Image 1 (spheres, rainbow, N blue to C red):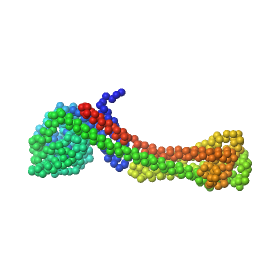
Image 2 (cartoon, rainbow, N blue to C red):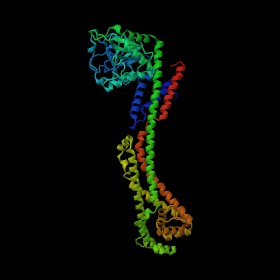
Image 3 (cartoon, helix red, strand yellow):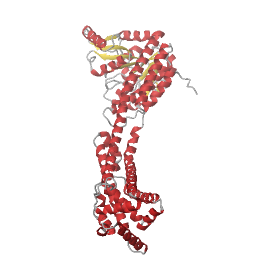
Image 4 (cartoon, helix red, strand yellow):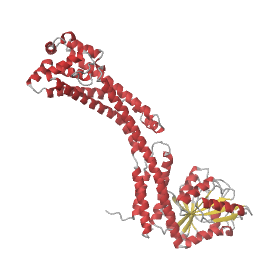
Length: 587
């Protein structure tokens, strides 16, 4: 089913969805800043870009912003001609944002078309003669999530004024709300004073306004008499150098307020005329709306690029940890492989038991005599007498098990140490403390794996006893004896003790080798030993892979989120759709 919405709206919604879950959960350098940037971008999409993209002819929103004590509320009151907002000596004075609109535009702002995260509260204009310092109830912090709506005949249609909290407020929530409102504005009326116009905080916001092509007017308030000639040229030069050469500046001299806390109406004639002129000119309104919208989308694209870079850093870190952990367990598997090649498993009790079984002094004289002893041993087992080869097999199993468990613990410790090297890794480790050692069930799984491998060796020998003569020889020696002999050969050298290869485990291994060669032939023994080792290596690797998967599972949650390519692609698509719409005259 085709989406009937304009392409730009479709692209915007896709981008918003990706920004809502950017995947920046790891505490890497700069991640917190980019998480905030993503959240801010989502708010601006909801508050401004989506509604303005959907309706370019909707009334403009002019936000009156500035520093603490700059006189924003007093100027708004003067423009409206009545004390609609609280202006006082307690800082911060403006806590609850107030939106003043023409009665005819009430429907535009009563809905959540813009600023949907702020609840609407309908207020009323104060009675004539009410001082501004006591107008209405004192807004509380709990009402920061509300937008008070006031209808006034003094506000021109198609334009609304918002008195925003202080941009440099001591309260974090005030500053956050001020920035949110400024990001949702079509134009700014920025208020500063003669002694604070060069402060860093206001200029940081004005720099942002310039980069987003927002229409800005500046009110230079509380200028001492005669000081305008000195301050005004410097302010205009600063505006020009910061990318705002066309921003009008309105000067309001320092003067006493009347008994109601109001400025004289003529003192704000400049900003009032500027706002009224914009509201009355439909073409100019559309130009401002389109310019600000395009600027916001271009700025959004720049922010998305930084967010995508931060997301890529998260994925790169995860990949790096995953590779490091895989290397730790690969090293462990290699260590097991080395231990099963150099005869280490055949030392001590294993070698002693094997020597007791085969009787090294007699076996060097004749392999056939070994067969005789093997048959006697098999007969003794059937008759209920102890069979030492079983003990040899158990000893080998225990030795192999100990090596595997030890290496699993070393790999877990190495991967744990790798996690501890970074803040992000420590956060993962803290959430999954069990990763520092092998899993609780690992020992049991390792034992089961060894038994399964030994069973596979039995089947391998049976599968290769094809002729009647070979089967007879296997039965004569005993299947367990042949299986143990194969394990001795596998664990005694690097290649199955054939030809001139070095014997590491001594004459006992040679006896096992000779036995197998007598039964299967020299080439077959090499192949059997190779297949047995390959099977063991594969099983050990699988066992360690499951251990490494614990770390991968711990990292998996951090992998959820948008892909960097998707973020960039969706942002580029939005830009293209907006440009095509503009070229086609639809935006």
